[in-house]
Length: 137
Image (cartoon, rainbow, N blue to C red; front, top):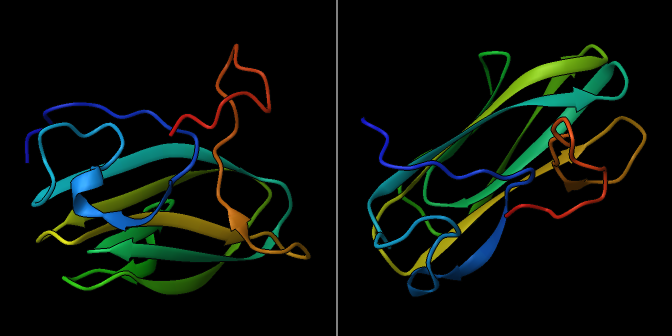
């Protein structure tokens, strides 16, 4: 596929909504489009990290090129989870998403840091951006 635009965000947090409310950053498309998020995530300590992708329709999470969560296919909003052992530090995070036929849109990426409760996964601030500034959805 050839990219037709770019969307920048620090978190993937698009709760379930009707398709006609649109997907943030995507204009003029309500169905049959794809989005690929790519960034570097900071993982505060080594251990087993659990990730949960909630989506309508297909979504997949890759960390350092390895498939961690597969929630692919045409389906109503649903979640899929996976666990991966990571060392502390930076790792490449890629989320691929596609929206099929209308009715609903959803895409959320949650993570569970070892010893912490589940939360929305957030990339660290980029250079010049202060921690705690806008979520960038």
